[in-house]
Length: 115
Image (cartoon, rainbow, N blue to C red; front, side, top):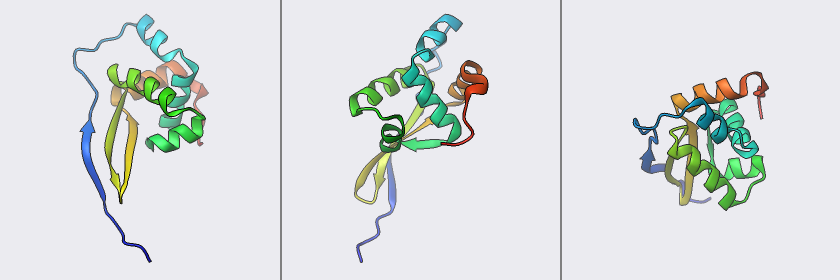
């Protein structure tokens, strides 16, 4: 039987810059992309998802997911936690309060109940 390693968080990004204010047009442009909408839907259904889970569920490449997530992080929509689960690195994404409100406003009734 293998050794059991605890989860260790080594970095946390709240990614909610107080100086970021998006107009409705900017928000619509940012969240209007189908990949970003799918990312928001996934995080509305599940509070947090790892990079690997999002990549698999959304069927994206590493680079594509990373680029879209970064845009949402910069706008204060997503936050992430980096750490290790055992010896494996793990990045976990969550919607910020601002991101949850924006996603619910933009996506409304089109949010699935479960993945």
